[in-house]
Length: 272
Image 1: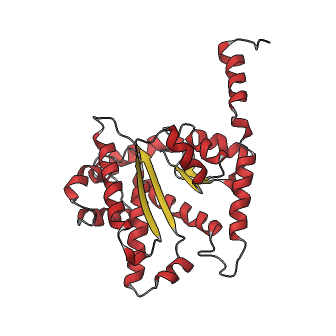
Image 2: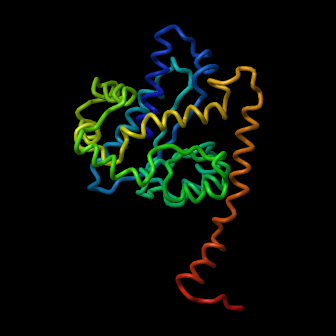
Image 3: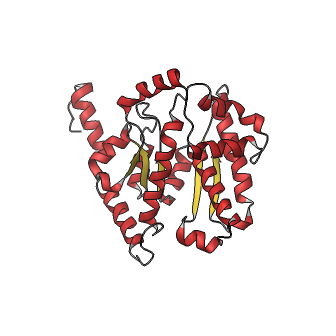
């Protein structure tokens, strides 16, 4: 869903340019400059993961070499993502995406690492995102998407009625199928998994909500869609960043180990 959103952003920028909107005006009124960094790895037999990584790299080739958009958007894939690389990426990020389908709890603890280093979170109401929200407050995290208790009903609806592809996502599929990001046959199974095979991860249902969440956060980071004379937008973002980090103490390893010792291991600390 993240790379689909990047593609939609790129297509919209190009559409605005085709209508005569200058790149400076796009930066002023529509989009903040953004570098989308993806990191990961795929198991040897995980075909779909490999396909997604391939798409990310092909999108990066197109976007990063399009000089007409003047560095308004960049796409980077970091191979073999690991803790050593995270030590560099987490402190350097303004925003982290933790967008696993609600109920799958795929975000683990990496969202905590970003939040501890000042990065705000855009994410689904899932797993550790819920715990972090409880500590830092809903005003300091950008949540979106269907809730876990709705997921099975939506999947059943997909099975009975078919998958509805929103116009925004269809636009992305059309660009991929027209070969804008390389050989479309290489991404056929990825699109079919959503459009024709039930969309298990509810990309079609959450996609517009994801785009809306990005619009909301851009109104905080910049004044896009808001008051053009508002000069305090960066202060608002920094305030949220500081507040987020300051309230992450609950997730310290000391507290976690104390709870495990008391509730699971049934051991008491020993003075050495």
